[in-house]
Image (cartoon, rainbow, N blue to C red):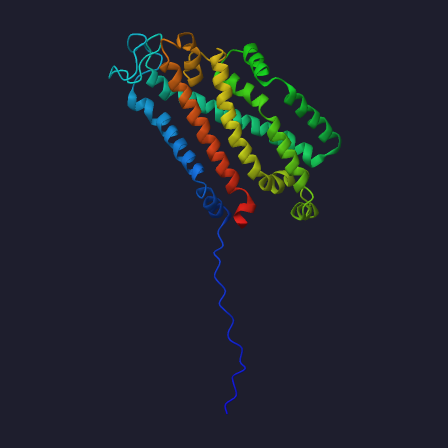
Length: 299
């Protein structure tokens, strides 16, 4: 009688696991967030409209295009109507978005630069530097942001540059606290200790070793500051603290606020544009938060 075979069955083949690069893995997580994709598409559409719209439409936003208070969709020459001076509302929307978004991006860049610089030094060096810079951060954090920005803009000639600097100087504290926490967490890790043992100086270690690993949450923070800066610029323009010779969405709302009942469209349309822009930036920021979160990559 034949003996049964005692040879063990071959082990099952392990499934191949595709290893993606960090950028491809981040994009995979980002596109799984449907709201973030909608925000990205909306933001791209708004930017393309701001870039190419004024040249295609060909109407200067400060010129008198027709009679005042022309209602929208009643005159083919001025599709979205005119404001209290007779200026084309659509022309103001197209060209005004450039100034609004420019201020938002530039002010966010100023705020992130200041916040990373102060937070990195406080978190890495510790001791008296941490105490001094932390007290400075707390001082700016308790200042009334709008009032402080109004004082800064009033002291100098109102312009896009002064508005950018003013917003940047009041919006950096959150980034500084986040950068400080990240540098405290990362400075004691093995890769930082190895670089220090190989002779890397403090500034090189901060810039080339720790900062790249601390960037993901800082990028998310920067995207949130952009939306806040756009709202801040709209508030300053509404109060008349901006360059009156540069059209922006906030300036459109502020200059027509006294005639809101007779000219509601000159306030509603730029307000809706600000809402959509800030919403799209917030949705993209939420998607970046998911894409740069390692825990979601593991899932």
